[in-house]
Image (tube, rainbow, N blue to C red; front, side, top):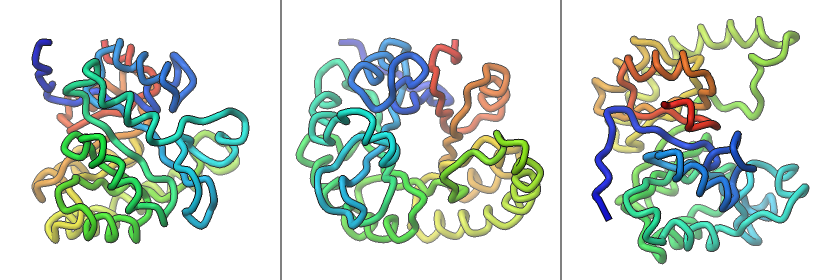
Length: 238
């Protein structure tokens, strides 16, 4: 098997390749692999809100309820196969409370070195750093559960919030990178401009941009030189 040579900007499949096959499924992961991604992002959710129960590959509880989701162990066994050798993993924790089990599962499958764990939960980041100093961590910003830019009723407020976030978030993110709390920032595309990326880069951090489903915007971000771009349709990378 030929060695995978990383690109300047990593091409990352969101939930595998959610626009090709339903996300967080083996079919979606395989579609991302076939499209030539460097990394696959997938979601991990505890079956119960208190962090107990099975660990499911699902974006939220509504997603988990409308299908029979894979369990984390099934997904990791798939990623540990030879076909995925060299493909990195972005393990996105949707809630706090099950960090130790995710770390143990990654280690058991020999995937800790290829894994980056991301989350919006700052308490999880602190716990993960304590548990697994060898695993890269990514802080996902902003901390929202819906795309407020997509709704006319909330769009103007969302745009104002973006302007504010571009000013206040970089110092916090830079401080976390320099303190060794995280290695990466996972930022919504609306936050990312040259200044935002410069702050992260100069602090020694990586910047992964989500979720970008427009070929022109992908090209602009590649020209900017961000670390990685996360897309539902990795065929857009060309």
